Length: 348
Image (cartoon, rainbow, N blue to C red; front, side, top):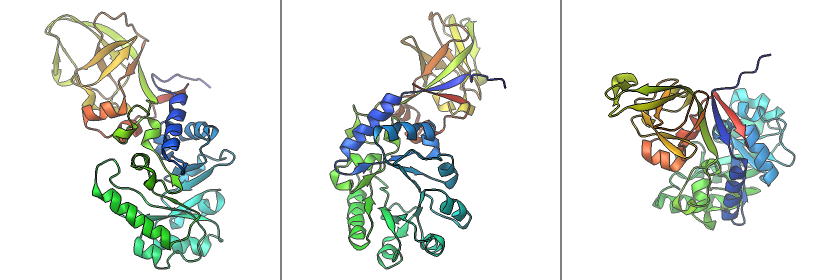
């Protein structure tokens, strides 16, 4: 079998990932700190993320779907995994086979689990203001969960990354549900919710984006480290005369003679067109190299000046999540989860 190295790679910092989780765990106070590893660990590779965080002491993990759960078998010793999307009729075989808990999101899912779940433990999501998945507070407190072995009762904050009165309203609503519905543990806070303070911690927090280098709120600044560093290989370095243009639409014109490195990366890899026109940049041996022209499907051009860059060299894209998000208008989540399958994942 021929092994071919990909022309793009994600250099992934294990120490930064673990450092981020440890800071979030400390900020969670008395609550245990879990980890959301859905969307293949936010694009970094769920199995590798889980392995590193489990070794650091994380015991509670969350994915979105049963396919994501199955891909993580067998689980690291001493860990628990929950599937946030609950159980549809077609999920029951997986739900009864895998050592994983469903997060039940509706009275229909509750009825399905009660009928076929054989008394096994489950988690339950209650909607306290997100308006997305979850039983209503009236359903949860009105007897819909009677007889279930609820391991964790969850809700989800809608505006924790903002200074919003909704946060306090959801906190009060979750307190009311907690007082009325018995469960082994209660969980409300995501990454941003952890930064709101100990009142939001309850028994278990569920950070996501902050684990991977995203800044959920200003309180986390200086504590969260960048984890993912996208890198692309140079295919060609070319001389461009003054007055010549580069890229589709001829949107960039050289004002003086220039040297341009064309790298093997583009919007098909998740490096989108919003990074073009001088907005995005890469780094090589400490030199900042601005993008010139439009980002193409598989190619992006960088102005390298007099840097001694040649074919086969690797450029590191500027991909600090909060800074790039502010610059290009994409959310930190989109920037991270959009990085494509053509990237090799290189954990260090």
